Image (cartoon, rainbow, N blue to C red; front, top):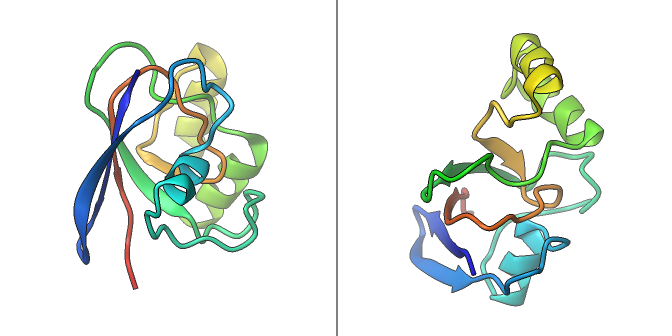
Length: 119
């Protein structure tokens, strides 16, 4: 079971344990279930409101599921990912950015730190 630590400048860090085998849960779903105030709007990967910075703490394998097409578009529009990083991901099937959309990032079996802004 991976440990997911949520961190924000305005809130105390909170670590939650993702249930083993929950490979369909997004970071946003887990945050909502644990009353972690990550901002969101569309929940469909189109607005960028739920932008988070994710760091792999366990260092085993790729971090989270691959980026969705919607996520790539929004991250590129926000200037958080370059075309070179997008091209590299297409070749080696590995995530090349720490910026993710919480509504799109599907959890894997690694410990991660999720940094989010707070209002």
